[in-house]
Length: 332
Image (tube, rainbow, N blue to C red; front, side, top):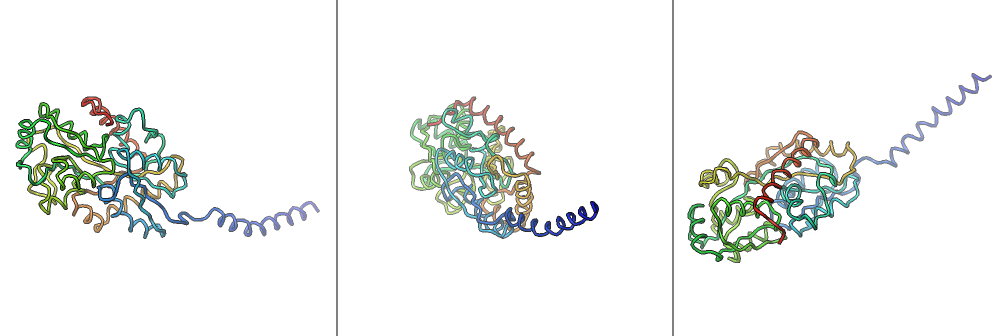
């Protein structure tokens, strides 16, 4: 009798299970079920915005949901970074961070920054690396880095240099040049909205020089409105093959670039992070994506897995923190 009752209970359990499991599956849903936003911490027109829009459509097609770009500019990217860090860790908010927000700002904004990138984000992977460039207004009578240094020394305090914000890599690059050149007296003009605003100011003549991500300025350079004197990575770029590197221009230790990568709020499920990491690697390897990036002077970049990207950010934080302390850069 006991065996019969046990058999009936087992049958009931087996009969109910198929009814329960689908209902549980529907309650949990299949990710993603709604649009995903990518927070870009700078205004439209800059390098970060450009990279995000190159990735936007391939990501939407692969995920089967719209991908929305949300520009949240301000405070050298800190406004957008803080908004992303406070978002729900559900896989529906992605942060496109860069060398400034993820590795430099913590050393510059020591009192005001309320985010710790290694603590408050779950990192996905690299997607791009944009060479930076030293550009000047077309009317400035210099055509090489040596001529620029000589002109700046002969005209102390008369040159304004633009940056995408006080804590940006571009600001540190100019500080590095000023230091390496033995002291150049220039006026810093930060544009918290990002590189696009700084480039517009350069074309208008409000600033006479700047280090800037090449993708943000290449159109104006090719149109003759700005002049590119050198690029900061260790090799010449195909988009501007006649432009020398800073190394070739007499500064052998001057090598830098503006890398960018994807992150999500801390606590995002590991399965979602791994899916995005694989997707980022696959999309940045596509020939059409690489072609679009390289046409504007940006190199596609990839990291092996989320753990490797987090380790990379930690190393870059140590590297640029040392530069900040050495040149004495502070938030304006």
